Amino acid sequence: MQNPSPTASGTLAETPLAHLLLYIAERRQTGTLQVRWGSRAREDAAWIYLRAGRIACARLSELQHDLMEGLAPLCALDTGDYAYYKVLDLVSGRPDVLGGDIDVRALATRALRIGAREDVVDGALASLGEHLLQLKKDADLTAYGFSDSELSFVRRLERAPQSLEQLMCTPGMPGSMVRRLVYLLRATKAVAMLPAARRTTSGTVRVPAGPSADADLQGPGSDHQRAPASLPAPLQHRWGEIVERWERIQGDNCFQMLELDPSAGTQDVHQAFADAVQRWHPDSLPPELAPLQERAREIFALMCEARETLGNPASRLEHLTDIDAGGGTPATRHTVANALKADTCYQKAQILARREQLEEALAMVRKAIALDSSRAEYLALCAWLTHLTEDVPGTASVTVERMLRDALILDGRCERAHHYQALILKRIGQHERALQHFRAALQIDPNNLEAQRELRLADMRQQHAQRSDAQPLLKRLFSSHPPWRKAGGS
Image (cartoon, rainbow, N blue to C red; front, side):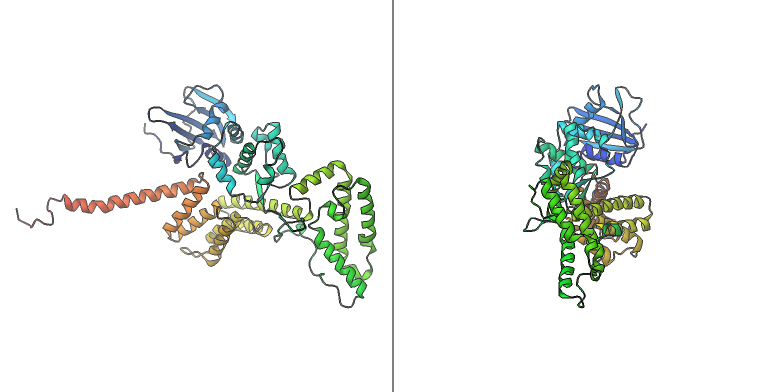
């Protein structure tokens, strides 16, 4: 019986085993993954069968009694090759098969404890820069099999966004393990990337504000910046104070809202709030300042929240942790909320695109960009969907080209931007440029099977062209009637 042809194949140097398994698990695919490594004298192999994205059983080259323990060391292999046979079960019913039901995330966690491809970890973390990481609300932490210390570390990203630099300072957690856990969370898409907060010279955190597509994430409008000229001078001054305080309080933490030092005691908090009531209670506004009633209510509500936060020791300690992490302000809460909603919209857009509901997918990714315009992958997907739905076949519009250019300016190592750029260039006939972007995408994400296939096909076409060019010459050289022999001559 002839062996079946693999759906995909490649080397472990380019695509680590963990990435392959995560790719299959994310798509809940069923199939067999063959992995081979070792020298020519002794070539070892493992056959892994996955059912709906979970590892069901495997045949290993060496005798093992535990499926997890047998597979975990293979995730660190940097030599060898693989072949994937989608749908096929080439393992069950064979001798020496280890059975089980393993979540790939748990296997990846176990593998990282015993070793890691540090080159792969470095590559995955290189694109983070100063971005903050926030644990997604739907992240299933039970699937990873974290230890208590690992789970405590991951929970930091649940409480407040953190940068890699901040996470590296986690007490009691070795830096190498911090990097591996962050890599794991990124590889399994359990965290969202948020824009980095900026600090002014005064030390106040200012988070870049992006446009919002949802009214509940926006503050009052900006149509009350200037006081009416008809107001008396004292009321004009008070008008300006309210507008300025509303703008400033968006970037203040609870201590700054009540004009307190972080060392202030509980009694100081109550006294500061009592003073704030006299000055900022919305009911104390004169009728002439009624247009600012909503802003005054928001200022006062935030001050009430600050009093509640600082008056409770537990919430005060949590707030100090948020401040240390670069958060703790209304602006960061709005930004985080927008970013999380944007990531949800992006995930929905990807699902709709896979279902070929392109118009709905385009509307959803545009909503993601409206919520958070700092993510290169959002722009890249929007460019691809715009090209599919709006461009004339064989061309790419100026709008699409601009979006892809902006995506690569935002993040030159955005794998999705290179990937979609390659697909569009291929569709409009610019094959050499397309291959350049496929190579860039594959260098960033060795798990990009489509880029691997395109580059492999390009190599095959080139080899075929070289053989085709050589055939006419060989035919002339070995023809029974060479060109130098005249017809009828000797």
